[in-house]
Length: 119
Image (tube, rainbow, N blue to C red):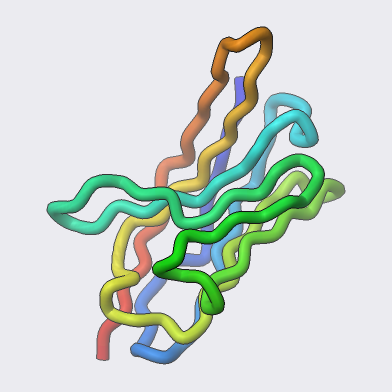
């Protein structure tokens, strides 16, 4: 069973930086596309960034140029480097692992880590 453990959240001032980590265990990390999602109070969960097993990345327009997703296939860990944070980035950030086998989707989530951007 896949397990995902996020860390690195906290309170930061506007304009500051944080790096989130998500450690993957329980299966073959290299089979999974990894994503970061976030959920702000009263809003739907939204995808922030994604990285394929080959390292191809995508970032939502709202974070493009400020956030960077990466993965370390030796440590089985993904990261989200967040720079120039804004109050609207405040949310619970979730790590997600997904793969497809014969059109069946296997989808796993971490417990989330709180990011608060406030002065």
